[in-house]
Image 1 (cartoon, rainbow, N blue to C red):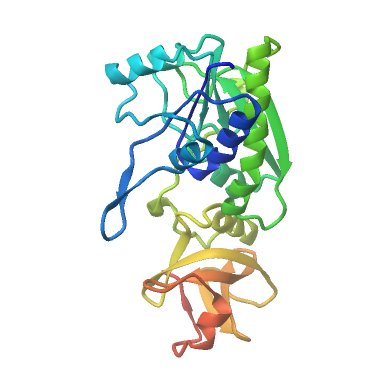
Image 2: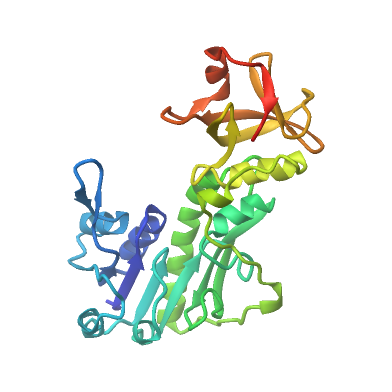
Length: 306
């Protein structure tokens, strides 16, 4: 059996771990340490660790630092043929160079488009109609290594980042298995990326998720969907932050930057038309359809977003 070491953390990486283990066998898993969560600050394992335990993978390493000599000694002792990395940390050369046949990452975009921490969000925000996953060999510059495989998927109109995240998970799993097989068989033909076509996909934060209503409504809608469900696009409505998870085009008139409640719907004005805010969340409340929020609303029926 080949010595495959899998590195990953969140749910996005789990189908790939499962597929690799069933297809080729995974010798060991590297993930982040358990974290204290909830009111009781109970230690919770990352999703990849939970999946590894369920698969019966005995060797699970959870280093605090990938540069820790003790961790690197443990990894070297495994004599990895291939390192498969999905949704994990940036690997130092001293780690990725241990793989006899190669270390690769599966990235959630069609590289060189959307290099960075949030490719799924930015694909939606920028109105892409197609995206996919890319496997590439690791080097010293993040997301720039030679491409081994790509798999494509259409982005339906109105899809949110959360929905695209789920749709890409099985695609990433297929790509991981295909790439591992190619490296093990010696059939991989890595191709360099075209750096002049690269676009950035930096991490998204709450501070950069405020809706600017002075854009065309398709731009605003893509922005909302590209940040749904997290960190969630938001605006200030009646003096309170309002998270917006989904919006649709509306024929109801409303000036840009303003809102109105019409026929039981919360309507937001953009530069060239209006949007119906379909799913929203107020502080201390659960995520709800806006029609349910409006039904119990007793305030002004129009105003300006702040």
